[in-house]
Length: 280
Image (cartoon, rainbow, N blue to C red):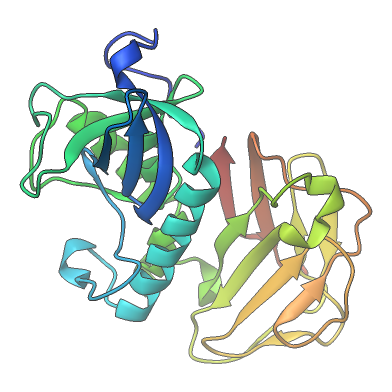
């Protein structure tokens, strides 16, 4: 995300043979199964971070300012899906933390995952899929806390569920951006989409509101479109039939940059209602 660097900050960037693994499976957004080059298999819990559970119970007390268990469960699944898309069947490097130790309470390895010279643990927090795990110390705790603060302030990812005082004008806000479609983005235009939520107690007329990016691609909401209280609308990049919950930009190419971009939501008077930024 803007203003923070996920590049490796611990240990060497050179891959040491014993710590290069292949991700065999994704248990949760913050837990993966891996295989070492000698055939050994283990489970890795990403050190210093915590994503919502994708199954079972979630605890809103761990997520200050978020009271909805349903919201946390949704983002637990999104975090797992994201980790699957980023890590499954990929070769990554494990970096261990001298403070946290190498093995956790349940016999799982505790590690930072390094992929493409980027600390994936930090990236999860920065993109709003995880919080800094403050219940235990680690070498990068302050960096993780800073990344969480930035994600909270931007209401990015799971933090889109913060209570109303942290939401924007009229409580209409960008609740999720899926900028990285499966496969080639240009061949899967509806794999790109933006979710917008109305958290206000009444319907909001969004006629002629706009959704845009940093390259001045602009989508204009259709005349007469209204978003009901508590409802969500998904704006897809490609073509389709508009409904009350799905709108289609009709753009011929991918819009949202996977590496770095900002989604801007504006009203019909060109007032900025919300924005969400990210870096790859």
